[in-house]
Figure 1: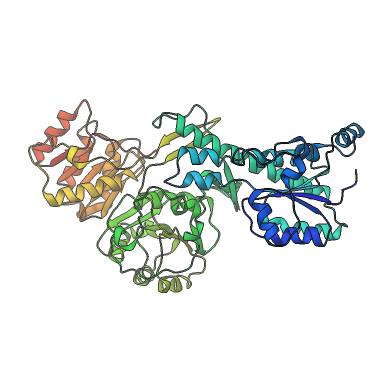
Figure 2 (figure 1 turned 60 degrees about the vertical axis):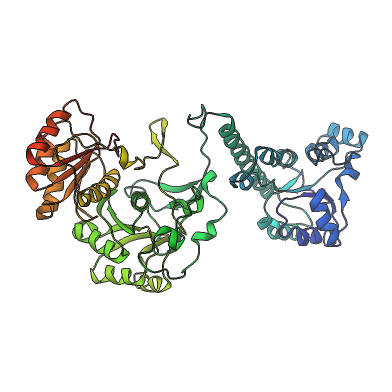
Length: 555
């Protein structure tokens, strides 16, 4: 069949951006009749646009607080009737059903409503749109004859096509618009299902059905290797509306070394989707690669474990330097000193706004950096970064305290889901099984090492001194080799340092490697059947041992 001219349009929108001018052109330039509902009808009438109210079309008033207004045969018959089927047209004529050639509808803002901390169950329920999705689906099903518009950004394109085709739209356009409808309604239903499931399910249980809705952000040049195809997707339920927090260039210039509460970076109000890596604004640099995303995720996850100003440098998913200090510049310098060779070409994360002095320190070290991620940057820092035009600079706009989320990991034919691991245990619950207690200075370093160790691939051994890592053994099949690598990297800095082990030491051998290197205190979960053997080795060396009772594997 030929594409019909747009003679009758039903408009009912929550987002009224541009709708008045769109309706004005439809009525004045194309002579279309506009049917509308509630608040949309009032907005159009106040702008001087002739509107036929929905209750005039249906013969029924809008009722039940607006729950029932468009669910009527004169609406859905006008949308669903096939113009090329005689019986459909005869039925429409018999029952006084006029054809509707275009539907302009967007939905109640359910996702924004339930994202509010103070939303009630009843308010959320009332923001579940029924009539809107029904009209969209009817129009999309009959896209052979009906154009359906869901996004104000499409208005000008639609009008341009109508001007080019004597007041009609093309079938290709209507098919594309119909596809957008089914994407939209699918995502909308998923948002409702996911929210409702959380209300009626045990909050500590994983649901029987897990639905991930992903929106492609970009194709990537390649995957881990050049022969692999890759793309980056954002989880739709996490995308948030406040992405503007990550989109600007500079910020006010807070003093280096301020605490989260002072500089406003951590809100303390729970997770903010806009602060996530997936929503970070890229201020400059080449496009992010598949491996960049992985390294940035590792660095950003690690740096958020620390309260003090901290720098984390990651290479190939492994932290090669972690340091905390009252000064973010000093934290960077100490993290870089841990392993300058590995830091070259690495990814860096900071949990404070980056000052210009820090960028100068990076340049003074001659360090090549793939990417930097931080909550914010001084304007002067961004100006300095511009000297390295390929350097990827990402701004999140804030920091979510690590944890309180879910991790997804694919395996062949399936998905593993778990709550995010974070160092949340209370040090007051730790025990000291050895004769010697750690000194206050040792305990401070042990707690730092414990947080750092969580972000290192297991089996992990981390040696730390003065709130900086000095040696890390990561990803080894046995713990004693991890200890040897950490000691080798630390060298003389191991003397007087402390160490952390992400899981219990099954034998005394890995502890003995640390003792021989001069480590004076070790923190580990405990719980091995040979704990007494390990404790005895520590006591013989005068080493303080702390048991946390918690393991932090990172596979």
